[in-house]
Image (cartoon, rainbow, N blue to C red; front, side, top):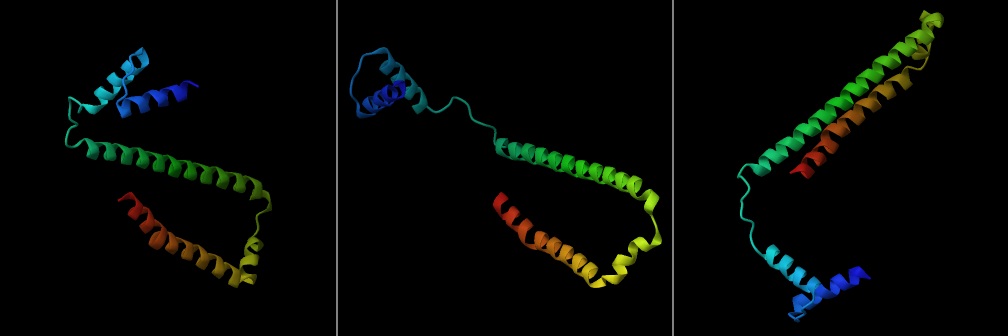
Length: 130
């Protein structure tokens, strides 16, 4: 109910209707204050500094994700070495020699995804930033 009363007061003020209650007087003061320009101006380089600050935060976040990924990769490698250490043999790679086409496809597919990311996705991201 209060929200409707607020909207009603705003509509009355915008239409120029006179009302002498306290709420209407408060709204008039607020509207008059909002019509005035601020008494201060932002420095010329304000926007550039703000963008620079945001980019630095983004770079830090990217660095933390990279560090976290490297940390989990090292932990995963240690776990794999510990789990496989007792069962390690040279025959472990016989699968690769028997399925060379699958290995070539896998490497090619990863290379293709990298190319798509570099040529298409990154360019779209850069165009959205500007």
